[in-house]
Length: 257
Image 1: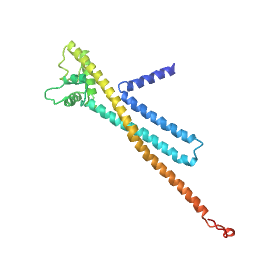
Image 2: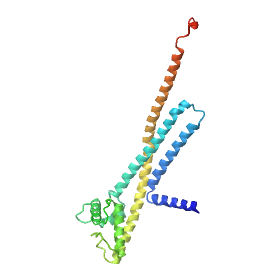
Image 3: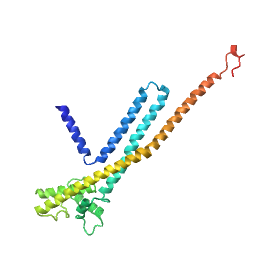
Image 4: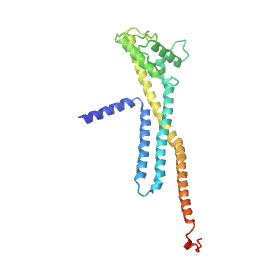
């Protein structure tokens, strides 16, 4: 049953991508919705026989412009605001209580705050890392590396990157307790980040759809409307020139008002 297997794989891939980031799913779904809405409008105008072809030459580009503005502005604004909210959490400027308590255990007296601790801990992992990949100094990375480090110690695996903050836990009971504590704090942080992502995505979509996008679309519509009016005036002027041309000699005696 290949079709069902393909569907299952697709659903699982989507779930893995958006399970811990519902805000991202809202942004992506909103952008897709704007795109297909604009596409439907363009197709409707193109297939409508009651609209003159000359008007279609202006209406279709206008709808394409509206669609690009809707999708582009919506996605850009939402991404910027959502990433700003994520950054506040990842840089430890705002934290849920459990996450703060778990990270505070890493902090030493010489470190001013959790943010400074994050940088120091990341530098420790970076200096002792086997590969040369740059490690991001954020909360998610600290949890990921710390959990991995304690799991290696618990399973008696060789540890090539010693960490003073975690080497305090020596016995199996101590390592297990700390590991469970970190995993619980990690889950709590992911839930909080997910909730903040949803709130920032909703706020950004309201800001974009109700304030910024209408202004941009009005400016675009005014541009195409002025272009259409100018084209109609040009055609009318040509007709007037045609009427006002000099009549042939046989009709020169007639006066046309």
